[in-house]
Length: 86
Image (cartoon, rainbow, N blue to C red; front, side, top):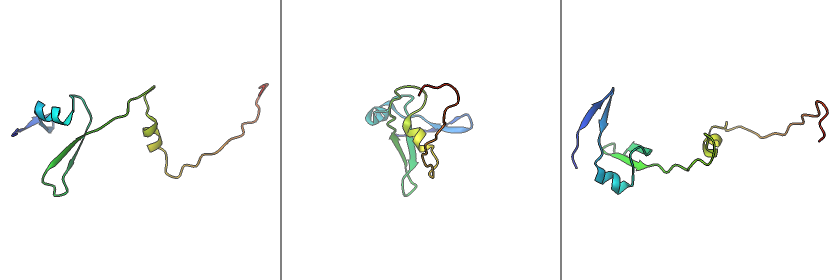
């Protein structure tokens, strides 16, 4: 397949043929990973499998990845502040 790069705003865009997207099982709007081959003479395009979100806006994997590497969990004793029954 031969295609052309086209201007798309301040970038260059490449349209991918439907047959290629079907073979890779990529649908419009899907996330893909793009990179260069080790010899830097080919572009590698891979579909990204994203875990579905169960609730809310955040995934636990993203939250854990954002934690500082030196994070240590700790317990706090808040004592009682009023007339708590526990």
